Length: 119
Image (cartoon, rainbow, N blue to C red):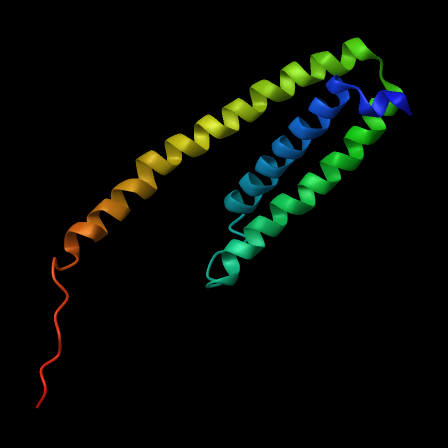
């Protein structure tokens, strides 16, 4: 039981939650889970991420129970690289696709709001 509260185990839990969350988000995006759902689309995609993160947490609890320290530390290194890769991809995707669209919308908006005239 003490093994669950060691720093390397707690780091594994955090990294597994992040990794499986991003994995769930990626699966939802690739399968078009929230497509044509309106405002519910974001909640559907977020739900995929949360459900996969919970699954990852449960699997990491089992993993920590049966493995020794060296294997857990190796898994931490691997999961760290995977999480960094997901973060790099999503930051690149935001800067390449979302940010230019936001800047274009700002330029299209009138500088001064117009008031309707009274007839």
